[in-house]
Each structure stands twice: as structure tokens, then as C-alpha cells.
Length: 448
Image 1 (tube, one colour):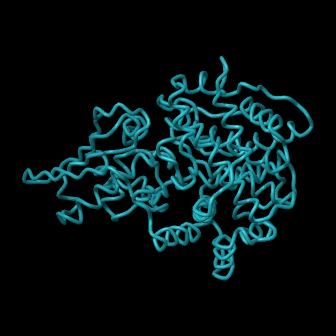
Image 2 (cartoon, rainbow, N blue to C red; image 1 turned 45 degrees about the horizontal axis):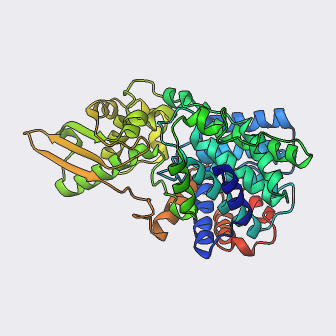
Image 3 (spheres, rainbow, N blue to C red; image 1 turned 180 degrees about the vertical axis):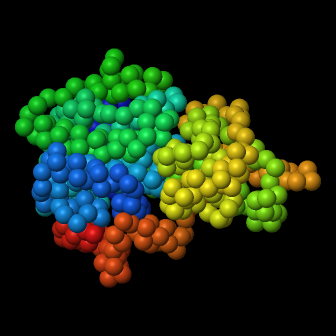
């Protein structure tokens, strides 16, 4: 049996465990927080206005917006907002950010078709299961936008099953979604705001794909393993052993990592290492002569962009030098560090320029750790710290207090923060998600 057939079988048979549902509640809340925070980014308002121009008004509430949008417009905006600061959760081995597309789609769908909280939780867990299984098969460096493309295929599987399609219908829907997938890493390399918009475009494609499958339009069947399928065209290096391993595990939502900082995950080991070094050795930023970072290929690929004057926020979020300087100055990295005044701060840029990045001998093209950071101080002292497992990883998880603090900080940084009563009601709704009779009770709490 092909990987595709086995994956579709998993879609149809999957039942989330109690542990899956607990993780679902945690990461739904996290995604809603990052989405609220994402409303302060300059292009959030532009995209919401354009979504209304493209798709008209409707009844679907996009995160943090005052006026409802159409279903497609809300999915587009939700996907963008959840991911536009690189603040959303990630599966580190698969290099997939699932929640922007999966949750963004299901929230928009639930505002136009009745959807219970239990159905939403099931759909999120099911979609993550598929998305991560697909991401785990890949063994090549990122070229196309796996982060959102695999998420879109997972969201399609979840929504198609939710809307009552059978095995053939789910297969068609996923093939129809594959035919519309968008995104390359060029936007990432340039730090373009198009990067997170690719999440939104893929979310919108999910809705179109499922609609077409419901009215009987057949999609490509061999959309993963075919000659021009996803694996052969966009990943280019995979084999049956990788596919078998991806299907042997499961319950992948329990393996998602929180991101404590609004930066690419490839920078987080460096932030952790610098915090440890400062705590141990009590040096000041002015004492630093050089910062040497040695890491695996993906860290060098994603974070090795040079420091420059006039960096855009999306560029700076994965500029290791800038992120390291921000962490050293404040002891953490927050959304405020990517505002224009701090991006133009000469002392921060000067410190950032002291970072040197080099490649280790790690053969895994998708590894984000271990990373070793060495600080050289005036007088010749050198101190090193290796991070093998970053904060937020399931083997080094954030405590409940820590991830709730992240949610509250994220929500507070929204363009129009929710008042205290609405914020607490939102938390309570997510924490009893499976008991929620209608997800519109949840989305109404997200309105600015």
C-alpha cells in the first residue's frame, strides 16, 4: 500500500487521545495569542482590507478584527496573523508550522457552518496528524514553503472529513489542494512580508479544494508520490523508509514546540545559550569582542543573513546577529524589538555585527540543534554553551505559567487589545473547548 493510501486511512480512522486534546487546547490558545499579536504588524490592516475587496463582507470573524469578513477572507487573514511574527508553534523535525492554516481554516468554517468545540478540537488534531506526517517524510533543505504547504494538506484532510467526505472524497480534496499550493523560500530569504501571507493563501486554497470535492470535481490521486507529486517535485529526496517512519509514530500534536520568542525557531538555541552564558558569567554587552555560533545546515541556511541598516522586520526575525544582540541587551526577545526604532539602533546593530556563524558536521538537513555559542570577552576570556534541546520543545516544555504568560503578553501587544473580561472569557472558552456548543462563541470573543 502506498504512503498516500496509508495516510488517507489514518485520516479516516484517527481518534485523538485525551493527551492529544490537552495539547490541542494548549496550542489553540497559543495560536490565538500569536494571531492577536499579529494584528499590530503594518500589513495586517492592508491584508484585511484587501480580503474584503476580494471576497466581500460576510459573517466570519478574523482574529482581532472589528468587522466580519467572508469565510475565505477570514481564513486568509487568520493564516497570515498567526504566522506573521514567526511566533507560532512548530514541529521541529518536520519543519512545519501547522496552526496558521489548520486553525485559521477551521475557525472561518465554523463561522459559516455550525461547528462545535469538540469538532474543532478533533479537526485541529487530525489536521496536525496529517501535516506532520507529510513533513517528516522530507529529507532535503527547504526550497518550497513546506511550513504552510504540508499544513494546507493537513487542513484539507481535516475539513474534508469534517464535512462528511468519504475516502475517495478526501483523496480528491487533498489532490485539489495540492494543485493550488503556493510558496517558496525566496520570500523567506529576502525577509519579504509575502512569507507569512503564503500561510493565508494556502488557507484559502483549502476551502476551495474541499468545496470542489464536495460538488464532485476529482483531484489528482497520486498527489504525494506521483512523478510530479509533492514529494518528487517539492522535496526531491524521500524514500519508503522515511515514509514508514512518519506513519509509525503518530499523535504528532503532542510533539509541537512552543516558540518563546517572536523569531524564527532557528534562532532560539542561540537565545537560550546567550541567556545561560549571561547568567553564569555576568558580563556586559560592552565586554563582548565576538560571538561565535556553530550549528547545523538549516540554522546556517535560515539564520545566516547579514546584518544591515534598514532591515525589514521579517528579515530581522531570522538574522541571527540581530536576534542575538536583542537577547543580550534585554535578556529576552519581544515583539517590540522589531519596531523601526530598535531596528535602526546603531548600538544594537554594532553588537549584532560581532556574530560569526559557521557550519558543523551535522548530516541532518532539517536539524535545528545542537548549537554551540562561544562568547569572547575583552581580556581574552572565552565561554561556551551548547544547546541540544531548546525551550518549548516537548522534551523541554514551557510550564503552564510560562505559556500562559506568553499568551497574555501576545494578546496585550495586539493593535487593539481585548479588555480584561473578554480576554479571560477567551481563555476559559479554550480551556473547555470540547464542551463549547458552537465555535462562534469563541470567535466573537476574538473581535477587537
